[in-house]
Image 1: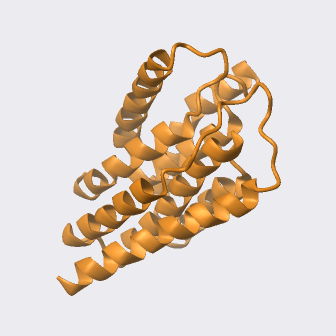
Image 2: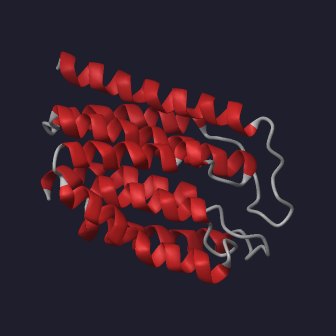
Length: 202
């Protein structure tokens, strides 16, 4: 029980740090006029959800290696969610850096499945970013998707990201189909976070 509580507090702290770092990075960034609409970071929701997730993962018996991977992923998801709302972009600090850490760790552990999943899942989103020239699908979103693939594994990640795409369309429609692009990171982050406990079972 103590381990579950400690894990929950740790993940909540990681989320809080991710939000604060995101705020610091976005403080000097002006959102693009044709970028996603900006908003306010739901700090309490993100920290509470991350706290709950940490407890669930420990309760499920996550290994130390899995726990380390998930901590990196939670930081990236929360920081990207916050950054997309604050400045309409996903800085490489929160996508490329965590992805690089995950890939280096996977290579050191000879975990080729993680690397293959990250690359395989990212391919269609990279293609979408290239085709839309970063407007319909941003390059930051494509990198975040690779993190999702690394964390969840290809089959689960594809399912989760399909749900995220559907939710984004519904959310955009509820907002009245604004002409500005969708802030996609919160949808990717939310669905990936929800699916993380399932990744232990696959």
